Amino acid sequence: MKINLIIDGNYLLNRDVFILFETKTLYSELLLLLKRDFEILSKMYNYDNIYFISDSKVRWRKQIYQDYKSNRKPNEIIDWNFVYEQFNIFKEEICQKKNIKHYEIHSAEGDDLIAYIVNNSNKKGYSNVIMCSDSDLHQLLKFNISEQFINLAYNYKYSDERLYLPVNYNVFIYEMSKKSMNTLFDMNEDNDFLEFIYSMKKRMKIVEISNEELLFCKIITGDKNDGIPSVYIKNDRGIGKTGGLSIYNLYKEIYKDQINFESDDFINNSLEIISYNKKINEIDTINDVRNNIIRNRQLIMLNENYLPDYLLENIKNNINI
Image (cartoon, rainbow, N blue to C red; front, side, top):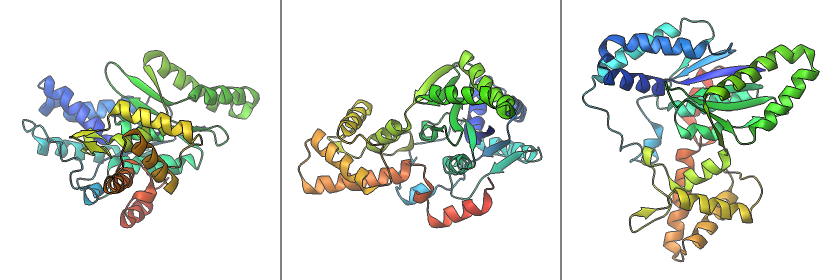
């Protein structure tokens, strides 16, 4: 099996910044801690490729929705000029290492680049270990037995480490275990990765993710962390987590096939369920909900078809899988 490690660089940076800020060693140890954490992550397994991904300071999603991430305010006590100077030094240093690929593309968020790498490397039979804390990236967690890949997410912490795996991942492990027993040529390579997963499972909390349920609920309920509102708001209250799950379950009772989020059927069917569930009858309100579903899908779904044409072209020209 071919395995990539993908590191959400901005998560790693912010994690280390706030750890050191609490211990009052930020301005003396940031570069050292970044290097140490990178070494720990990169040596956990003999990865084929290591991708280190950074956010652009410009976000294309703000062109779609002006309030996108407008609720995020940096801690003004921290000298962020110093932080990003150290981060730039760190990125320059790791780019000199073998099999390390660093990508930062103007107006792209790290999630966009990670999704592009994951989806296109899957087509070439690569599995991906994504080091992140952002649940938006959990929509990428999936496996394919015939193409022999699995994507998982690892929340790197000093305590309460978590391993996020696609729902029914044990089916993949079982099939790969059978294959490695029956195919001598692949036995070492496949067994090494399976043992790596087993070792992570022993020391971490395991969380199984249904990427379909997660993506559906995020589109319907919005994302408070990113300032994305629910598709339906009444009396200043949107559809919450429990309501989103209820709407998803009702949707799946009626439409049992796997959801194609890119289709018009998803828009029409979810609108029908929300209108029924929330007793919406006004045509103007129904049209608003429809437009909000379309907006949230573009903001939340990590799919290259929803990227601006200029950005997708730039990504294709710069990222080498």
